[in-house]
Image (cartoon, rainbow over the protein chains, first blue to last red):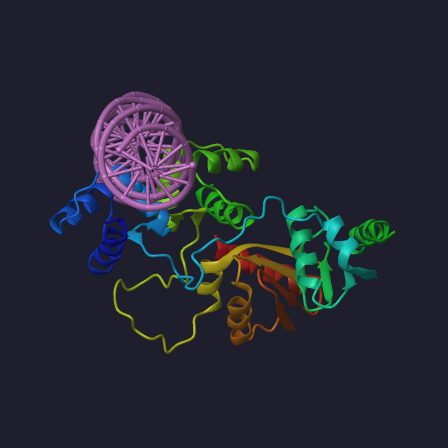
Length: 153
Length: 153
DNA sequence: GAAAGCTTTGCATACTTATACATCGCTCTT
DNA sequence: AAGAGCGATGTATAAGTATGCAAAGCTTTC
């Protein structure tokens, strides 16, 4: 019964906009599914629907294949960890700092640095094995390169 | 004040998940925006945010404008449009300008800027969520950052 | 076949979001 | 300057959604 209902929900959503769970309940009842709002709340969670200005919508790029499970990051790695894992060397160039990393390490290193939100860092750009760190001026770049070198040990 | 806050909301959302308006309220307060849940409800409506299993998220690749048709856009979007859709903030760093965008927004933003052909812009580099704009000197970078901030309103 | 274990559901209610209404501060007009 | 008009916001509350708990129905196990 449940799987049938889940399909019916998808069908209803593609045919007309639905802006509340109660509206969905009424539309489903017309199709022979008579359940309460509570059940629909659970169904919606299971279908991973999004609610936007135009009501509920199906998840964007539906992952087919395995039933779901995008594993959880309970704690994204720290910049220090990333530098420790991937960092090779850091060099200052006027107001920039160039960090060389192991191949493929640039993106995660840059992402973790962004997450730290250092005030001396205006932004980062990452290629495959190089991260470019932009600082407001050369002095700040000096501070940053020093700190990173410390992490490199 | 309001436009500033709307940008802050986009920024908060790109940095960490937000699952309720009250959580958003607390995070904004730390940044100096002290408003009530009611105001955020209105802001969220205005930004056309979607709420899904992982909390609020920015509108997909929304072309706002004409309501329904799946019309193809024959004219490439203007830089102003792109900044309006994806831009979070712009910061000057000596002769460069760093523009932070929503995730995935950097490439289209940079492409549209290249298309504009501003004389103060020597070139651009784009990552996932960061665009680096290179200007001939700091003065020109200042002009560029000012113009972009105006677009961010 | 009875008990244990699991899934699905409804009920009641806590939690979250939207909105009617009032207020405040601006800008524009007379 | 007074008043109209407008947008932004807070307050209070209505509307909408999620969830703890318990009951009911199935399956499995012995």
